[in-house]
Image (cartoon, rainbow, N blue to C red):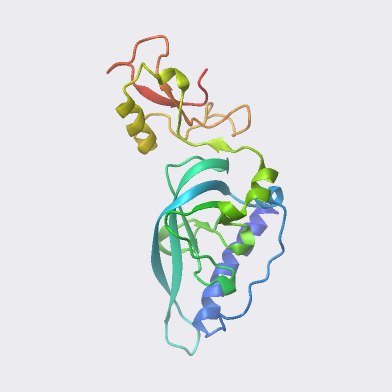
Length: 229
């Protein structure tokens, strides 16, 4: 069922492009079946809250029989996640949508925090992008998502420093690690990489010391762990 839902999402993107190329009326209203947040979580590949830190526009060409090639506009937002409910942690996520709200697309604003439900549609998106979202996916600004966040429950905080680092690791080292998580060992990996993710096998999103019983130093730097224990 889930793979079928992903194919539907991919097909919808292609159909949208073809429709725009054929001169479809973009003033038509978007119509969605509004599912509870937990159901949308089940059908998404990646779900997180995060701030849009950059946006850009990309174009693809669509060719319709008996018509000249037409450029289709897409909107891409880069997010820095704060909490995650689903998907492998990354320092940033790029999410693509069409820019027409009337066609259930989205226009993201830099500096605004969102709850994002995204699905993979590999092979159908421009420039090798994988994740797509829409109004129908349930993506919306945080200030409108209180009910959804309550339904989802607590997420996994991204880039948290363990309390025991205070006074043991220089503050600038901690700040640098939180600012660029992927530059330090373990970020986003599972506690046990031989098993699937679960509440008993979380991702490594807590900044700690490689050997907590040994003083911090060049041979005992900061690393990402699944917990602070």
